Image 1: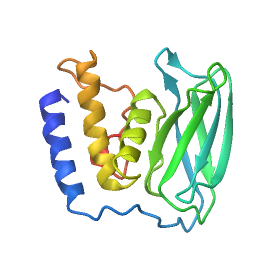
Image 2: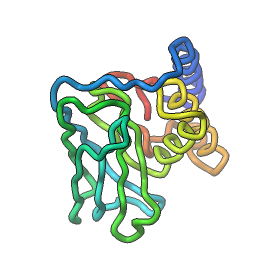
Image 3: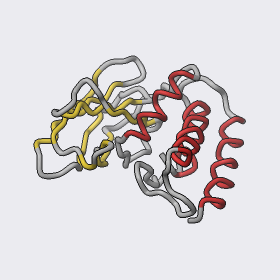
Image 4: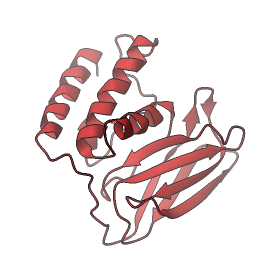
Length: 173
């Protein structure tokens, strides 16, 4: 997808998101949810890290360890987990620089954790909290920041953005 189409798509997503309320979604999942993805930092794949999932109440609901060999993870959130959920990866080589990603619905089954998703989470928090509107605004800001810092020039970037069957945040996050 070229960048112009992506920007139009993102703008439409932001407009649609602004039609909703600004309150965080705290709906609880009625069954366990398994989320898979990868962890990467500015240097590439992170294959040794501790990953925690915190629910909307700030409670750790699940943990998983990457032991090396692969940066892929799967984490199972128990039934009753209140969304949004923040996934935080603490790389073994640099645990004081955690990477974060937000999962706003139990329908999400894939979520990568990277510097870009960390920017999205931090920006959404600075906008008032993790909710659909703030996540959409933050995703737009992260894309803009990535382009300004020498990211993808003309072609679509695949770093840290993964399509999701729910089309959450315009299908990109």
